[in-house]
Image 1 (cartoon, rainbow, N blue to C red):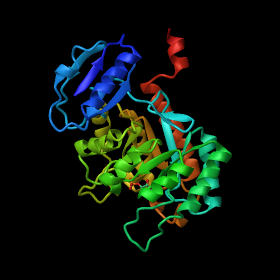
Image 2 (image 1 turned 180 degrees about the vertical axis):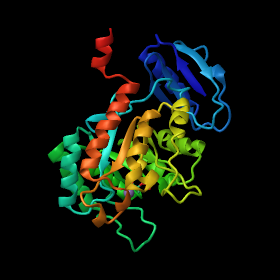
Image 3 (image 1 turned 90 degrees about the vertical axis):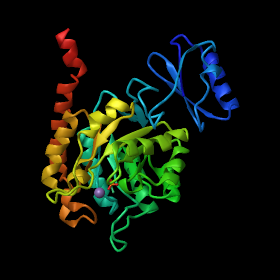
Amino acid sequence: MLIVMKPTATQSEIDRVMEIVETLGFRPHAMPGASRTAIGITGNKGAVDRAHFENLPGVADAIRVTKPYKLVSKDLRPERSVIKVGDSEIGGEKLAMIAGPCAVESPEQVFQVAEVVAGSGAKFFRGGAFKPRTSPYAFQGKGEDGLKVLAEVRDQFGLNIVTEAMDEHGVDLVEKYGDCIQIGARNMQNFSLLKYVGQTRKPILLKRGLSATLDEFLLAAEYVMSEGNYDVILCERGVRSFGTHARNTLDLSIVPALHKLSHLPVIVDPSHGTGRNYMVDPLARAAVAVGADGLIIEVHPCPEEALCDGAQALLPGQFIELFEQVQAIRNVLQPAEETVALQV
Ligand code: PEP
Ligand code: MN
């Protein structure tokens, strides 16, 4: 059930609906929008009786939700969500660029990349301190020491930190040092972890599972939101398929498909999506052309020495050039303010 309030509804009318939902033993989720607030109801096993709400002051409509997900849906919030991450945002007018190495290896390596990323005008820095590696013998990440290096990057360069947590302890640490908690592809259906990050107040970057369908992806986001954390950013990072020419198959068609159904921002990871340095640029450009709200790109000062994912890392110079190109593409799709002003 979804309660749509009238554009003129007062806060006390909204509060009254929330109270009734709670009295019924369910959880209300108020989503303020540009023209009206809608209140999603979760926790109900069967249909909720519309009669509880339809005649209340300020209520425009009580709608039964037929899709498997509620809170991620555009029915709840028709306009796109803009998610605040640190002192910047993802999903707004500007293309969000998150860049940095796959893994934190050393302070020198991290600062070298951070200087380039900050100089490019990007607002977000990535780097894993907890690495989900296929082999238990591969480099697993620097843990808390790595997070401390990332926190220094924020202090020195003003970049907002996006970094992965793989378990509840990691979430507590990333909450302390970072600005955005990344849930990796392998954990997209770790439902207890999703519920746990749903109780934090940090934005969540949720990566699509290795073979997740669109519904599974949206339901994973729904897990986070149903716990009260509405700040979720979806990330397409390629899925497993039969080809061997690339590490994964980057599914760019999911960008408009997600935007059609959901108000959440959608970003694309062409680094993991392709696994090959020479494919990152063209797929990044394509991702922006299909309407992605942002990109997450791996950059390393010396890819041949990288402890993780060197084959897909861009060199700093390649990254700077790419960022300029994708911003130009974005401006074609959504003219920059000055361009609009000139046409008037
Ligand atoms: C990463 O971003 O470094 C990573 C491990 O990504 P994914 O979960 O998409 O494989
Ligand atoms: Mn990586």
